Image 1 (spheres, helix red, strand yellow):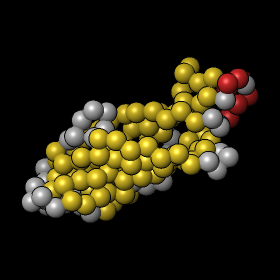
Image 2: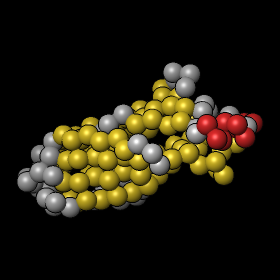
Image 3: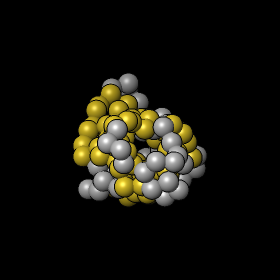
Image 4: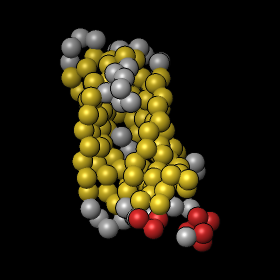
Length: 133
């Protein structure tokens, strides 16, 4: 994991790290698996719960897919001010590079809905693996 992608909005900080999973990828079938770890920190003054997420996934050819769902990794964390929640997941794409961005739908303790935009983060097969392919 090299670069850390960061954004701050609506009282939350999002930090994302990405990594290529060589062992789970199959370049002969154009399947590249990238892992990402997201740290969500409530830097505001109001507690809120993550209800759902929406992702835009763009591969190296420019094709974009959309993924929506409830919570993250089966959880809907409630974050008090100062608290963080970290999770890891993965994204398969058919090219050696791509990017992903989206948002989390939230509700604060007063019942007000809002969203937290993530930074755009990139996937790239490292050069040392390209040489092996």
